[in-house]
Length: 304
Image (cartoon, rainbow, N blue to C red; front, side):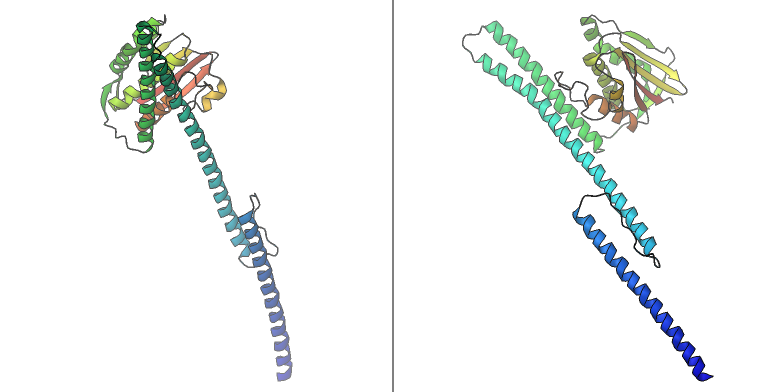
């Protein structure tokens, strides 16, 4: 009896040993397989994910966790590539925007050295140089301002503001420029006193940038409006245009984006980006529309 028991026990132990050896062999095979796949992923650019050759124990679960981590790393790599590409394009744009007025200034300064030119021409060249230096100053100011905003180094002092009065004052600053160009903007401002909470400097930069953008890129049909809509003060700045297409709306508020691909207008493409940053920091919203040839930027702030 005892001999039979020992024989059965020996058989069972033998079977258990075989099973353990098989599992150990599977573990070793799977670990070697994972190791070779990880070495491949380390040296090759691929969408390849880890696979299983024999599912034992928790290895399948571990492989799935590995694949989740690998996919997250790939997404981060794609994001970083996109950011790096954006920065490279930004540097190219900045270089062009700064180089253009500097080249112009250098040319006019050289022409002033010509002993044959008249005093009248020298005065004309000097005015051009002054305008180009003003453009360069505006470019540098926008770059510095955007860098501060993006870095969170632009503190906002929120206060109660009558947006109707504020908007009318901002329009008046540019009204002469519109009329000088032969354009009479349509202005619609709610007679109801509308109050919002905002920083005066940030609000003036938003409106200034939007109005300047309309002046630079608009072709007429200007309309400035302020209305109350569902507990929001809604500012609209609209104009006719032949430069903007539907596809531009997705990128219109991105930094350095400009529909003028030749950049002959000497704009940094930061005006709308700054307006968006300031608007959102003050709890507002901004969006752009294009219907037929009519471009509209709409900014809204909660009423208080």
